[in-house]
Length: 191
Image 1: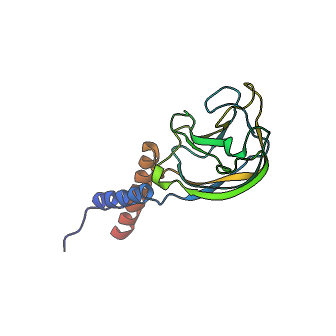
Image 2: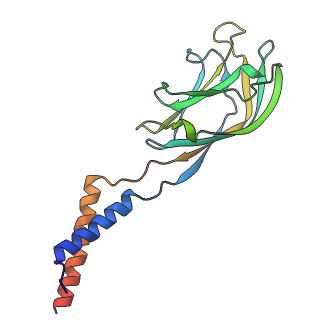
């Protein structure tokens, strides 16, 4: 039977450990955002809109969105015009949806539902910031005048963190630690 040299065994163990770290399953976590107080003011992308940045983790993937909320559209604006756009902090890859999309009345409305986002492959950038912009699909009033209020409720994003890939310094420490363990075992066997 051929014996594997101690340094080769250490390399195999270290490589296995690094592969285990790199292929660790990403954990999904819900991010709940209270929307109370947000206003729908101008058209998407215009100054004056309520814009929030939420830290969800670098390169996190948005898997799904669910919502349960109450909206108030000020007449003559309609509930169907109130919308929220979300995506990375750059604002270049946003998805827009209107919770009351088929409700063409003014006043208060309650809405809940869910949307599977997995087909979009939507993720935030390296800064980890999810951008939310509350806006109007159609501008009924003068510029910078609120046309609707998000009264209460929440948006819940199911977010998967980017997979944990160790930094080079961490990988080196893992290798060094495994090398020390293997070396100590080899010395014990020789005694």
